[in-house]
Amino acid sequence: MIPVTRSFLPPFEEYSAYLKEVWDSGILTNNGPLVTTLEEKLKDFLGVRHLFFVTNGTIALQIAIKALALSGEVITTPFTYVATTSSLVWEGCTPVFVDIDPHTLSIDADKIEAAITKRTSAVLTTHVYGIPCDVEKIQSIANKHGLKVIYDAAHTFGVNYLGKSLVSFGDISTLSFHATKLFHTAEGGAIVTNDDKIAHRVRYLRNFGHKDQESFWGLGINGKNSELHAAMGLSVLPYVKRITSARRQLCALYDHLLKDTELVRPQRPVGTEHNFAYYPVLFPSEKILLRTRDRLNSQEIFPRRYFYPSLDQLPYVQSANLSNAYDAARRILCLPLFYELTHEEVNTISSIIKQTMG
Image (cartoon, rainbow, N blue to C red; front, top):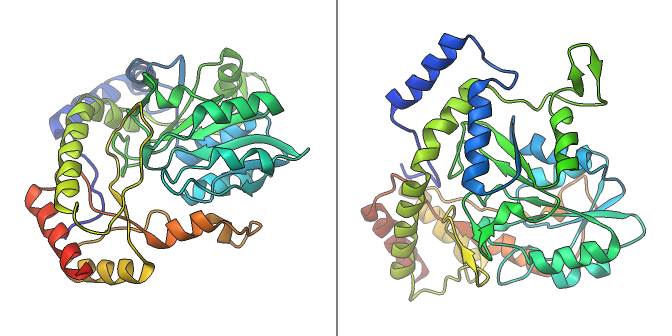
């Protein structure tokens, strides 16, 4: 069976060595030494000022929304994982969907300004598949209208844009360290900011609002993560470059084998150093996609429709007429891509796709 992704597992003895540290210290949670070490290493790796390791990528978004005191309407993308939208609704904000660029599949920055109203407080959008949004234009619009900017950077670990980490743009970027991600902690996420005042608020928001054992800064929630999850992150982090290199080679092989088909790949802006976290392809039609997916499934190969449906179709939001997002959601399929995937398996997958497409 070939899944769309498979978690990278570090050598067991390396993970066990960190677990022994946990046993020896007796500290399991509450920002223990391994959590602190992981945060420092990740800040160095990503080149950012502040990084907070949290429970998952969804709580990272929720805390980010609280930290910036967002309310009213928030402009966002309909082409992403549901957590981006549901976090806004959960925190009492109204998602206002803007269509995507048909080439990059990230939000179309040229359409943002027309969606701004007196109730707009922010832009929260996703670097889909690790493809950078038009961060310069988005920031310019935000500055002009006094808006905050949050980037859901769940797909972007290790991506650089214009010479710096993609997570360094915006007021806050959030990361997911779920087991399916290129870098993972089994379950986990992070909040990233270069703003000291925002970091001050996030620090309290993550820990129930505690100022110390007997006093409180204000309202907070439990967004902390454990020493056991930090141990996984510390075990995986040294392998990120090796993982990325293997994925780069697999993507190059897919590119070569599928170059004469009608499949279209999303475009990356000039200046992007990519992480090869996903291999998305656009089919000529949904009919051909479904036929191909069914044929692959019959051979125990399981690609995924990341991201379907377009999120403006969710039952708890206002629907919109977003032709590019609707079209992409119907025609996009992510092919299997993970560290242990073999070249032979990529050949098999590509051969089935070409045979089915004719």
